[in-house]
Length: 370
Image 1 (cartoon, one colour):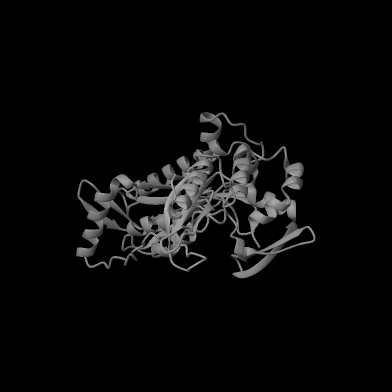
Image 2 (tube, helix red, strand yellow; image 1 turned 60 degrees about the vertical axis):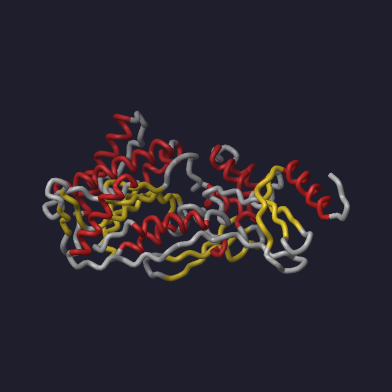
């Protein structure tokens, strides 16, 4: 059961039902997914080294919302983040946009999502600077999620934060002790005040009259950083719903499974097909918007400083996490005639592929001239 097949079969009905709500980014994502591994304008060409057989294969679309693409991209991101891990405790801080502002976020996603990142990052940096047990430079990675486990629209940003800070003046690492980082209620108060100011005063966005006074920020101790990174990597580059979660498409209704966070049990949700398609496609991000961002000590420009901190912690007796080597997977295709490996010859356009195929065929014929 594949999302792309459901989308292809019900595209006309979906367009009629949600024509006024489909954004340009959504249409681009739909076009990419429907073209994925089916568009023959550009193909990868393969030739067998043991027999005359050759073949062309359509390319993947590579869109970050496509459920059948970007697996290697996700693995690559996770490997880079693993290399940044420090031998300390980690926290996950989650900033959630209240329900009353979600319509505004849907209408102007670029501005609202950018404001969410900017404000949340500034709040964390200021709290770290003023905290007695920190008082220095910290690093953290933020990942934007626009959905909850049921795939409803629910914008929030998860930040993974190592429990410690670096004092550049003293060249010292300050370890945060205990299983407490920041007061979540205080974070929420500052988050609310600054985001509203950012949206109204600086971006001139008109907000609804009824805005709750209490917002939600969650600050949890998550132990070591790797499990949290793996959790965040699930929805980075392969859409919000993997094909394996879709369990049926019967009588105009689609059912998919998800894990409920409270009882930690797998539950099933069933929707009319067009509503299911909208449920998934509404999470397509605007083109060019970065879903994941590194700050402070975890930025790419701080690599040398990060290595210095890792060395300092190792000398102090900390055990550095073992980083499994991630090797790029080389595409392999077997010849259908002789079962021997085929060689990748390159990516070609349609006309070039036909010409190359003709030349390869002629050069294998005895006494042939081209």
